[in-house]
Length: 305
Image (cartoon, rainbow, N blue to C red; front, side):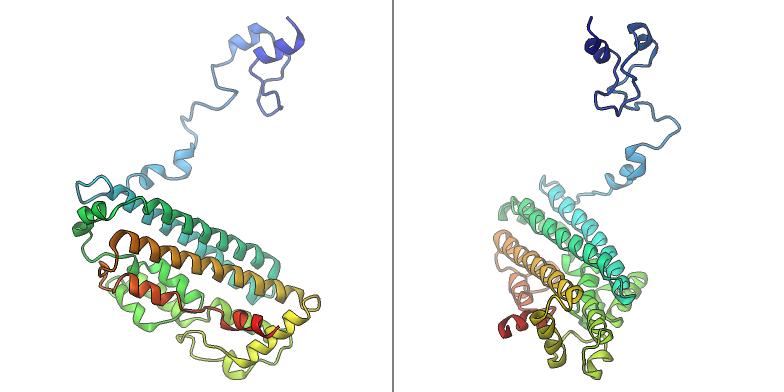
């Protein structure tokens, strides 16, 4: 037997990642417990993949109410979306804190990650779109008044990105702990508000009324902010961090718009123009939301260059 064949017989990883040395004898191999490429197979007393991810809890959280086969798709689609939104909020809050302390490079990475999360959410609509109108109609009566419109994480993302609306607190009034979270996000400066404060700290003459305002109100166009961004875009090498921040925000809003648009088209494909389960007009309401601009000056400045 050649040396190379001996190494194959010991079970050692050829790339050096396994526990086998590659020089043992057949007798040594026979004394080792059976395994698969030196992988640990016995998790008695140690943490496994399922333990770490709490999979018993996670995979037991789907409770279809109807006998319809397609309801499982509907549940998993929305539960996984909520998990992605949880991560998006986690990253946005961390990015906001980084901007507040003028530590922009970590914020860029976090914003890029949020944009990719939104891309993932856009693609997820393609899975739900495999549900036909007939299939959805069979399970819709079991949904009651529940609707994605009531997602408190989605509402917090909207508020954190500047689309504030105090009326959107009402769907959460029956859950005091959730209401407190959403209210706190409504009443705090949005991510874009914090970026505008950053512009002021970097020496740009931002109007005082833009720096201190009623944070519960949505973002509106401000001439002093637009002038600052125009300078940044005309002299990017002199304001590179701000220039990169601006482009990260545009990328983020672009992905957010695509998420909204894909939501609209999926709803139209499945229920047409019926009223939504949450009481909204459904697709017409969602189409109206496509007109919302989160960072107005960053889009308008492109026309001025």
